Image (cartoon, rainbow, N blue to C red; front, side, top):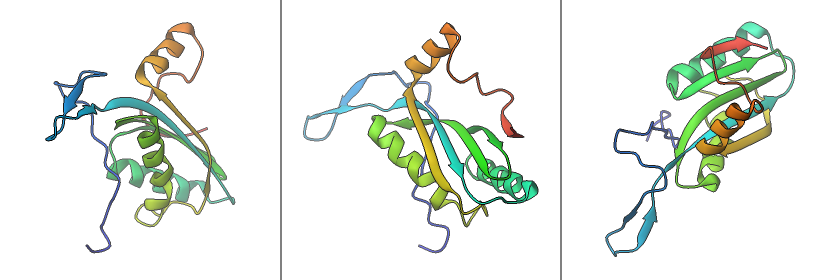
Length: 145
């Protein structure tokens, strides 16, 4: 593999997706199907020109269209998106690799991850319905704080 090796994958749920459904593997053992997880990744570090931060986040969104929205300032950013994974542990592991694995290809600032929230789709929608939690990711895209 050349420089373009990308270990992260993210796909949207297809028409046949059923939350909580299970299948069996070739040995007949039960496997848990993927679920959707709402990810909020917060990063922070040394001040970087806003134009560079925006360009890096736009490149990340272009490379990975699963990103819903990014908010940024010259010393921190927040990325929100949906991830399909078997469980919270898998979703969190992918999220924790996102910034570092794409730092060079998207020319992201050398910031560190300072926060991560991973919640299932049901919890996300419950929070929205109750009027607390993150507002729906609209408008989609890259925006200043």
